[in-house]
Length: 323
Image (cartoon, rainbow, N blue to C red; front, side, top):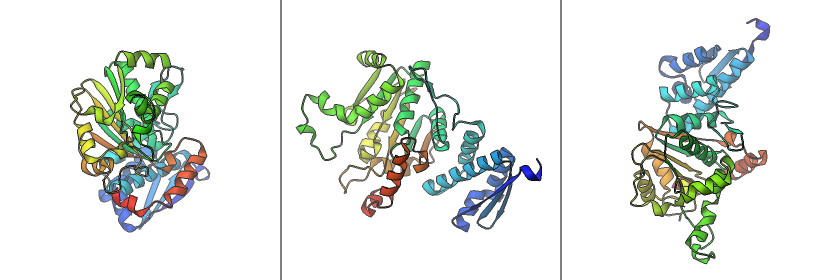
């Protein structure tokens, strides 16, 4: 590589404390990123200097960005975090990476950001995955895609999609129809994801044969599910007791995925979200992955990202305290 083809970038960290953790024991994490992306990495105080080809420097920047996000959310970094980030960015699990599943329409479902790439990697390698992030980051969509992939490959025999039927401004009893009709609005997003990934007639057939089951969280009590992929959507609206109940429904050869957005808790203010509790209680346990998606992982209309940021700036302190 000639001097003319090299580019240089600088990353300024928030503090010396952040730098110490980010660099790793005896700068091991810095050396790992240097070797993985063939880029020169020089750290001075709380500043990182990168130099190399445009592609190499870009990948190193993305790696540091993901590691900093993990550190902010988890309060620590471990070698496993570094390995996952390097693998996703180096091997292309994001931004046009490997297919998660083939939709019945013929299109391929792939992660579209580095954060989504880490999420997909966790879905493939862990038995329990908890994913927290704002609206539009693909939490539910990718979870359903993974469930469909497992079903098609024969890795599981059943998909169970669950949502808390928490009332947000409307009383359930005031909605028209029988119980199925009453809970349908709460479960609609799961139907939408399924029908986008699979042919509607196939979804209908699977539901009639109990291969796909969609139900409110309360209906999970007392069950043990073997050979199943079980997804809890809108997990922020489960209480700690409900979350424990849900997670312990896991039987043999089963996978559990929990998704949620801590900025959209509809529980009474005095009740702690079971999702926030689970993230703190279960992180670091082998076999369980906790993934945090951020505003940069929003893949809906670009305006959604701006809307999320606008509301984040005005987030009620009482809500943050409950998290």
